[in-house]
Amino acid sequence: MESSTTSGRLVAIDYGTKRVGIAVTDTLQLIATPLTTVHAQEIFTFLQQYAAQEPIAAFVVGMPRRLNNEETNATPHVRGFVRKLQATFPDKEVHLVDERFTSQMALQAMIAGGSKKKDRAQKGNIDKVSAAIILQSFMERRALRG
Image (tube, rainbow, N blue to C red; front, top):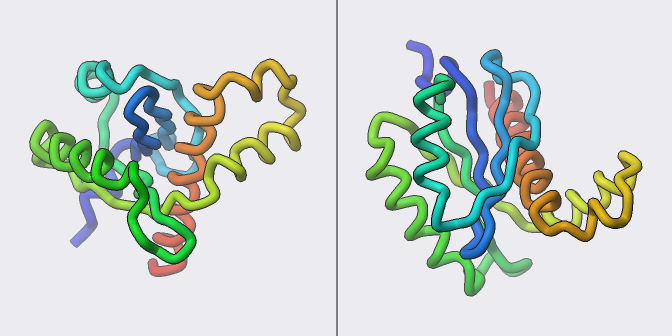
């Protein structure tokens, strides 16, 4: 039996209490692309509108951890977000992915890609690229298992 993760787009979320970075896959789930950044208080409105326009197979949420694998100050906020996400979209799987180093990786990817310094200074750009890295990490891990 196919997993429900195989039909529709995967939506990755880099949740922060101020901004939320969002990335998505294509419908074949081959390519992760940064989508946008929204204010945290608008995230559920955005996701419901997006789900009305695009088929969503599952959500992938970055889970903040320290180097020693302990929770960070942000971890309880992300857990609360995940509970609300599961309640809002009860028919969708929510996968949690370790997000350590994603912001640094996003900044390095932007530099390597030739982003201007002013674009890299906008935190929202880093958030949506971080979400894409979280999503790519999830897809690579899934491919190794599959």
